[in-house]
Length: 154
Image (tube, rainbow, N blue to C red; front, side, top):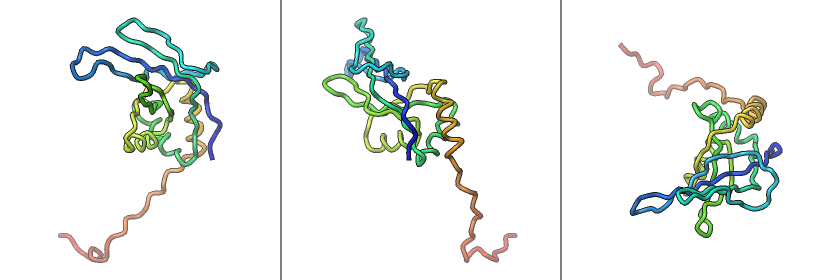
């Protein structure tokens, strides 16, 4: 079961590099509320860097990812993780999440994932979801193997 998604847009930035192995670098630089645009739009191009707005994405929260949201919120800097791919020479965001665990699974699967700081407005929404749905596993008593039961140390 999931909660309604929050529509967002991602700004991707291309930076020109003075490097003989790589001529440019792409990174997400901001996640912001989606204003209802339908197509990517060039925001800036000064020759050294270019920024593209990619609308039409959503952050959805799922109960089975509550631990991943909790881990993100309790980190020193909570992030929105952006999974993106190169399409026709440009970086295009494919999915956004606020779950550490989901982002890790995507990276384990070979996807390109980068984080941008979680906007304060979204932090309260995620925090409320975590408070309602995250239940830490209860602490379990350690069971000693039979070979150690009755063993005395001295």
